[in-house]
Each structure stands twice: as structure tokens, then as C-alpha cells.
Image (tube, rainbow, N blue to C red; front, side, top):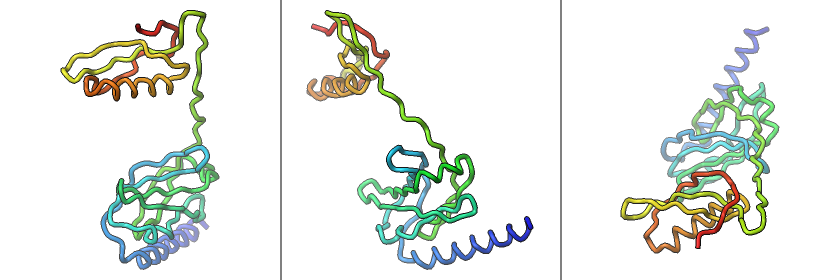
Length: 189
């Protein structure tokens, strides 16, 4: 039984390869697999580096997992030279297993990612006179650095404010690194 199943699987892969290859003969360039992950609200997302492809070249993509073919919905981003393929989230049923992606006449062996709980953004409430924020080290264009307490109730707010500091410094600050977690402190004067 195992031999028969292996033989059937090999025939399916061979036929699928020939079918996908014939359907995308006009595509240009090599596709390189970059990453696969589960994205909440989308499903399983696979990203490829590629140039010279059009959406019609990637419309018949699929992934073989769990003894079945599953549709992949792929789009080409010509500006970033990427192909992004999305499968339904139920594909995570096969998390950790190897899947075979058929994309524009090429085959990729990938590990199917698992669902990961999204990180919960914590906010911090501080006593009167203090505000929530984090310490941020700003890199100066001359090579030195300055550390400031940047206000924000969440790390995203701290990041947004640090981005504004870099932009409004008119070239004095060229980058930054958040060097602490959220804590209560005083806004610099």
C-alpha cells in the first residue's frame, strides 16, 4: 500500500510539474523562496524574490500538503520584485510538515508555518507628574549619540515619536535604537 501511494504521489508530482511548466512558458527569470509565515487576518503567506513576472504568470500556483493540493492566491509586486502567495489559514493544520509549492513552472519545498499568537501591545499608566515612555538612543550624523526619554503609552507610540525626532532634526539624527522597555519617567525639557 505504501509503495502504491508513493508511486501515485510521484506521478502526481511529475504531471503537475509538466502542467505548471507548460502553463508558464512566457515567464522570465528565476524565483527564489524568501519566507513563509502565518499572518493573522490573511492566512499562510509565502514570499518570493522574482523579477520579470506578471500576475497572469502566477495565477495557477498551488501547494501540495497533507496529500492534497491547495490553491495559492499570488500577486506580483513589480516595484519590490516580489511574489506574495497566500493560502487559507487552515493550511496550518500541516504546520511543521514539508509542502511543495508549484509556482510559475518552478517547484519549492517549504516548511508550513504554524499560527503564532499576535503580540499584545501593552500600555502603561503612570502616576501624576510622570508619563509612560522608553529611553531611546539617537545616532548623530557626526558619529556620536544622545539618549532621551521618549513619551508613549505603547512601544508603537514611542517608535512613532522617535521617527518624528529623526525627521524633525533636519539631518542631525540619522537613526535610533529603543534601549528600554516601557516605564514611567519625565519628558525632557
